[in-house]
Amino acid sequence: MRKTLLHPLNPQSLIKHMLKILLASLVCTFSWATEPAHQVIGSYSRGKIHQAHALPLQGKGFSFLSLSENRNWGSLGLIETLEKSAAEMIDFFPEFTGLVIGDLSAETGGPIKPHLSHQNGLDVDVYFIRTDGLDPKTSLVANGKLLSAFDLKKNWKFVKFLVSQGRINRIFADRAVKKSFCALYPSETEVLRRIRPFPSHEAHFHIRLTCPAESPECISQVEVPLGSGCSELELNNHLYWNLNEMLGF
Ligand SMILES: [Zn+2]
Image (cartoon, rainbow, N blue to C red):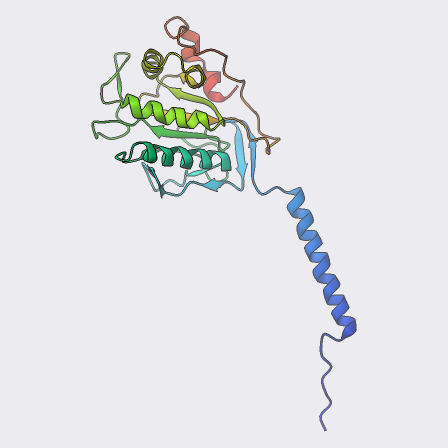
């Protein structure tokens, strides 16, 4: 008669097996607790992202200018801010064809050409909303003045939606954009103060979030001064050219 095979999980080995599973799950829990899934590290111009989130290549109210570059990565806050603002635009302007998104960050952050920042998942470029149907990269500023194809109403609403979410640190745009917004909406101090005049932003907003509270290694940028900043637009040349603004200091 053939000998009955001993089941591999006899009471003793069963206990051993259970202990192994328990130990493994404890190790798992421990490493999960000590290594947070998602972190923003360093500064805007010298930083990286751990476990970045991706903005889908297409969504409600937005699409990308270029689908090929794999620069659709950012902090969870950045992705949520963009998706919510884009959806709010469609709800408010049902005929709106959607935002055109440029670069966020690379999947693990770090330098990407030609940007000085965009390194830690808190920066994104969004092209101005325009009425002329031209290539989104075409400048909407000439001789220091905003062209009529810049859709004042929609662009203003977009920056308002962004700022209302409470995570925006700064929005860089050409001085002509801020001038026009100052003239049209002079009492909107909280939105206006976040719009910072900066050269080479004649076709897009550069949107920057503050450091997320859950990322202690994120190096934050000084808060924007109180007040709209509208009266300084003509006088304060150094504000216009302050490179540290863009680098994030
Ligand atoms: Zn940018």
